[in-house]
Length: 285
Ligand SMILES: C[S@@+](CC[C@H](N)C(=O)[O-])C[C@H]1O[C@@H](n2cnc3c(N)ncnc32)[C@H](O)[C@@H]1O
Image (cartoon, rainbow, N blue to C red):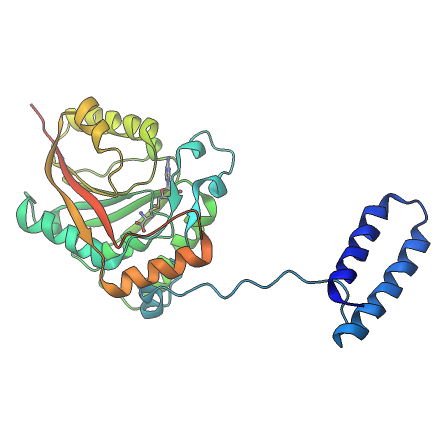
């Protein structure tokens, strides 16, 4: 019996499974399994699902023993919270891009030294951007993450990373909706890797404007994959765009992103090897 016939027969057998004669069905299946194994010289008659290849390890994780990889589409991050629907996806920031963007802000626009500035990751995911910030002398580092599984992973990653970075600034992860997060005092640098769509971005910017209207300290934004920049220009002109441009990933980071997309989201996402980024400052009157 050739394999295609085997399949056809199995199909008709499965279609038949409404039959009440369960024992008969079992017998037929056994017979059929034997025939198939004779043909192929193997035992299992039922085909197992092919196993997924192991997830690629990002160079950042290979270096630090953390796990910040994977690309998880927003639909797969729903846990029933009313803000779920606005999540874009989980994907960690590329270290090479992070360094270039931070350097541009620090060298060209920062009003205060890093030691006086709080770094806040809006949608911290598994914590990669917070850890990258931890390699710089920020006054403190905080992140907010809505998804409990990602937040738990971020905490584990912070602990793993801390073992080899004892002198790094304090890093705190808050598991909550960004709109409920307490904003640290003093100058703040917010980091956004396209965490949510227009509605949530509008709410977030409105909150920043209210909060900073009555308190001292700069409110600067680093915005990676800045999809909502037209919203910022049109609805929140109080945020002045200091810079906008395209930042290219290093070869190693681009290759890592390609491998992740192939493994996790083939046919859903593509990688271009760069991100459109912008830097904003909230202007106070
Ligand atoms: C593209 S990932 C960025 C991960 C991290 N910032 C990094 O760069 O490595 C965006 C993250 O924002 C989170 N997020 C989206 N909406 C949120 C909200 N309303 N409150 C808190 N986190 C949110 C998502 O769950 C996701 O983990």
